[in-house]
Image (cartoon, rainbow over all chains, first blue to last red; front, top):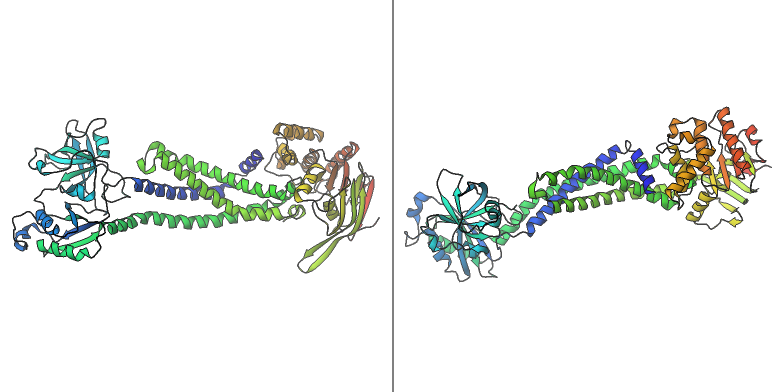
Length: 402
Length: 220
């Protein structure tokens, strides 16, 4: 019977062309949605290198190097600002760590540079973030090899850097990256770096950021602070904000401080990053509903045109159930043919690697399977009523149907 | 072989009820060739449909081979239609997207039968109607007479005991009609019971018995 149904569907291919095309397009959109959702899930499972619970992020605005000495409110203007902030904030009993960075966390901002391996000259574009010595403790960013920054790095011949596993795998495959030298290839400066530590990953934009090779450089103790990452005792409530502001103002009362719990910033970032997926989901739902109406209409029409044929089948021995399942099976077969064509086109993406790890093989297989199930389910739902209606007709009614 | 007792059939359209058959009693013996005649709209096709279990009567009883069919389920009736009856229609009812051989195979698809056996039986049926050379053609590549012979092959492929023909020559010219009639006579001579609806007196004369229907009732 399957062979017979396949033969019928194949012989009616020109009549089914438009329907197949509609199924194919719907499949492509659903596949894109599934692949995007799957990619987001994959990214969400990967380590970010950041802990967000009981952390606050403070952005300082209004810094101007020329005015630094004129408006400082602390008694000791010669003390580096970072140290002043550290001292002021650590007066808060709940404060556990005070660290600095030049890049906001859980934010769309990103810094990139070009690094060159000193011995081979191999270059690589990387994400860059500069952090203070305490950042690793404040963010609970674990090192998997080497060490983080400390006072012994002051005056080192090569600027110390910590790199992530992706960068290590790309620039130093098969060798220990600790101790290796790198050069800044983006500027004409002859800055050289030495790898002193290795982390699994640091994804500053959070869970939904694509993994990129990352270099972490040391923020000079003399730097003008831009971003503070604070670790507070677990359970510290939002009332701490006033206290934080008070302590921060003790250092520079003329600067503006925007502070936010990192958990809140993370949620806000996740929402922002989910917007494209949400838009795609809405578009897919709209398109799928249109396809469902279209499919239903076309199936209704096709079934109506075939009623005399179905009457003949009833006359020569088909039961109502045979008719019902034949229509369903034909629709599912047509569906699978359209989906197969779509998959032949889509498989080129992982084969050529054009989308890289955004569409790797596990993701492709998962998206293909889920999208196929969704489209088959949609087709099945659309075919149920026309099939039921056709199967309810008596052979006489069907044979004389016009 | 076929026994109809007090068969009535009504058709309901909106607010109008039409009595298509009224208290029909009819018996057909095995091996008979019975023609049903009557004016258009008198109920002869309805009678044929009820004999062939394509339609259910409003009242009355049907016996096929001594079995009373009153409470038969859809699948039991479908099995009877498949194994006991063969149908030939005025408009052939061939599936244009399927080749001749596939059209002939159709009734066997609803039996548990290996594909090779189905194909062999379909070829044998086509050989009987002289269309072996046309089995890979599509129906619209054949003449009307050839199409009806394909329909006869399809009706006979399952070796049914009873062949029901609803104006089998109605869409054919006289020469093609004669070809089809000779096929039916040959089948009857081979032992197949035939019940045929026709308007054509000449064709009816070939049968053993003529049953006349008028206004839903048998008139002789």
